[in-house]
Image 1 (cartoon, rainbow, N blue to C red):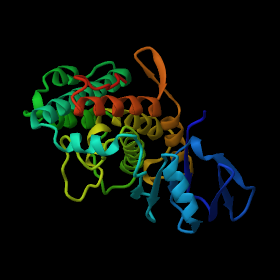
Image 2 (image 1 turned 120 degrees about the horizontal axis):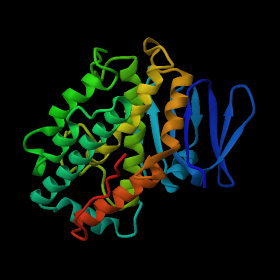
Image 3 (image 1 turned 135 degrees about the vertical axis):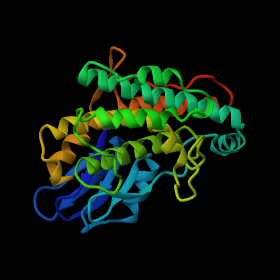
Length: 297
C-alpha cells in the first residue's frame, strides 16, 4: 500500500468519491484518482476547492485527516475520525483518569526522546551534538527542570549553522513557514494514529491549552519534529527562504514526510512509527505497558 499526503494548492478543483477512489478534477488538466484507503491526509490550500459531504465522511471512515489552510497556505483547521477503535469508550475513560505521576513519566520519556533526536540531527549535520545528549539524559519526571526549553535555545542557535541568526517565530514567513507547515502535517498524522488507537487527541499528558483541541497530538509529535527540521535545513540550501512556502518547497516537504526515514539501521515511514507510538501510549495510559515507543531518528 502507498501512503499519500495530498495538498491541493495550485488550482481550483472539485473533489468527489466513487468506487473507493478519491477523485480530483482540476479546473484544467486530467482528473486524478487515489484509493481512499491510501490517503493519510488531505490538505486543501486553494480557496476554490469544492467537495461533497461524501468526501469528508469517506475520508473520516478511512481514518484520514482533513486539513484546511488559510490564504497564506498555513494550516488553520483539522478534521479527524470520531471512531477508530473497538473499545474507544473504555479507553477514553481510562485515559481521562490516568494518574498525574504516570502522565509526568510519559512526558519525561517524550522530552528525553525529543532532545536526543535534536542532538542526533545536529551531530549528523555538524559533527557535534552541542551538549544535547547530556541534556536529554538529565530529563526528570515531568521535565521539572525545563530541559526542553534549555535544549531549544542551543538547538535553534546551531540548527541552520552557527551565526545564522535564525529565530523560531510562529508568525514569521520563510523558514518558519516551512517548519509550521511540516509540523502541522506531522500533528495531523499523529492525531489520526491516536484516534485509531482509541485515544482522544484532546486529553494531553502535558499540553493543556484550552484553545488546543489536540493537546495529546501536540505532546506525542515532539520527538518527530526533527524530521521536519532536517528537511528545512535541506530546503534552505536550495530555495530562497524569503519566498516562503511555494509549490516546490511544499512538494519537497511532503516527499520527506511520506518517504522512508533511517531509524536505528532500518528504513521506516513516519506513518509506521507514529502508529506504533500511539499504540504504545494507549497501552501505557491503560497501565498495560511501561515504555513508549519513541524512535531514535
